[in-house]
Amino acid sequence: MSRRTEAAGGRERNAPADRSGNPGKGAAAPTPREIAIVWSIEDVQHIRPDLGDERAYEVLAHSKKWHDADIGINWDVLYYAAEALYPAEAHGLIHALSEQINNQAKEG
Image 1: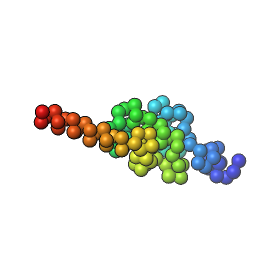
Image 2 (image 1 turned 45 degrees about the vertical axis):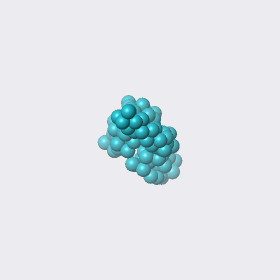
Image 3 (image 1 turned 180 degrees about the vertical axis):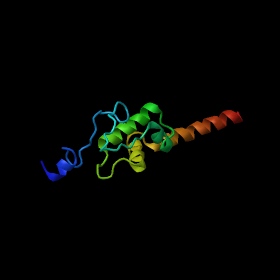
Image 4 (image 1 turned 120 degrees about the vertical axis):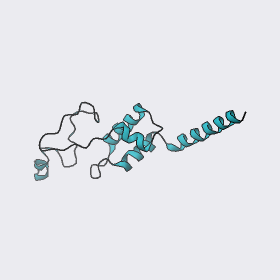
């Protein structure tokens, strides 16, 4: 076992310490030698208010699975994960059409 692996508690340097498979749900509490940073669906919805709870959770799960361990998870990672899964361009088009329909209904 390398010195780096030993320092990481037997894990490879960039291997996650995850014990649950789910971000936020059922995750083991950190030991006195660990810390945990928690991201929630509300954080995802702060940057993408158009996403419901299920889609926001999918963004968290995607971010957890595919993030760069040297960078971690941050606002940019969440934003780009949301974009990859649910492009905002489609949201913008739907929003614009919805506004146009609402304006036409008010006028008519």
